[in-house]
Image (cartoon, rainbow, N blue to C red; front, side, top):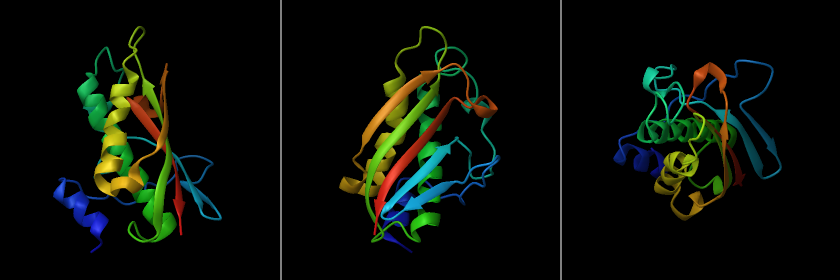
Length: 157
């Protein structure tokens, strides 16, 4: 067991398998010491999106449920990172950037709070290595009607 996986377990999470791409793209791309991870949806351990994590935040979905969905996205990012780097301990130098896309109802502007679900989990799991630059954007629609999608960039050894 790794220290990072132990930390996830302490937080009540289990790392899912890396999700397979559903179209003509790859889950991650490695270039030298950089790993760029494709946008991850809030798939749960069963490979499905919880119905509570579908729809528009600020309408059918509360900001709290949307932040929970962002945490699931972050778990899926970590699963892709483990597939790219081999492990989440000594191979991962730092999370450089997270980008969040929030399926927002018209007039909902508190998208940063939703994205905190992913950002906070990254720091809780990776510690200082999890601190990152970030952008968060409200969008009109997301694949599979997901409430949030998160992408990432990491430096690895």
